[in-house]
Length: 480
Image (cartoon, rainbow, N blue to C red; front, top):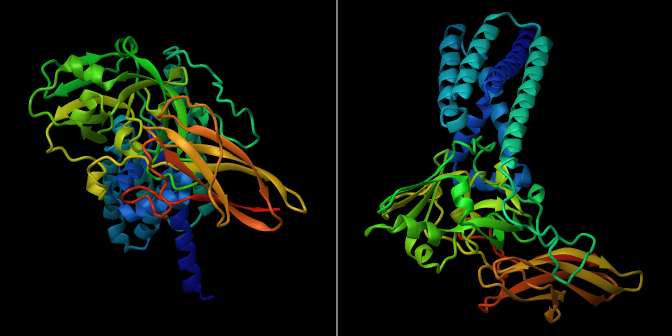
């Protein structure tokens, strides 16, 4: 290798190390002030990335989409440092300044972490500029220092998130949740529980981390085209709240996946809140606005009449909502995909006309809500032996808001067979099911489908989530 090649390689490695150091310095300063530089950039990426990129990320990353977003932002930041280092020396200082300004602007989009994130961006740009002005060398020191600062920043952020979680938990009981409702199915190894613990409930939103909201200061504002503007505390809402059982389904829940879960919720019927506020003429949509500015809107009339039973949820399984699930309040309309009814960290309900444009409409999703289709999932398919034999097949099915009328399975291309259903908690909740079937020797495919009380049979056409929701039948392969 030539001397010039060796020098270029050394300079490139130096730039990478300085990039890690700058990233660490920025994150540590932001974390010390309660925020994150990376989270602001991650939110910006979520807001403006092409919908195909978002869909690919969700499909590939699954439950780790937030971690993958932070990793992607970190790699981009280091890449920006390398790109700056490749510029002529006279352009490196203005490039570092542009990097700092752009990153600070991105951080300012995150409502509860704006100033810390912006300060972190400025610090990162300053370290980047200083590091690139020094001759190549001490790469391991830069990289080690940066990695250590990133780890320290993550520790600080998680510690603050845990403090917020404990503060939310101290709000007190939210409902009289029965820990283990019975449905007659009993226990079956591998079968999903009837009620999903909050710790196992899927998380889906566009934020890297949940906003930190002080319950003592938080108020729900109801305004817009109403006769009576309202500001309600958690205590005010708890006085009007009722418990209900319902499954929540993400629009990205492809067949067989886990972006759906069942809970016993505590919430105030939207009909009650709207009756108190008294909508004015011309109000046609209910905008649910999160504290970070994210909005979802729904047609007002079916919510006002109760045709679509909607709730402002404040509790989950007998406790306050965990921060990642929307503390202190979220909106939920059972039967509508979460993307259309699941605004978390709600601070305002606004009644407006049809001129409002929602977050996801700008990304190409339909304006009108998408309803959850009947779907069955196979959780268990076990048994059999060398000469074939009996297999236990079990799972869950949902068809909100009407309820599950039946679940059927088939082996290969044989006829569909009905299965035993557990008792129903509520039409909007999921139902567990189980059956025992004889499987002949060999390898076979078992499929399941759900049928709703409205007569709708699960759609067998395989289809990705975008733009009208997923389709297809869940199948598993067994060998007897």
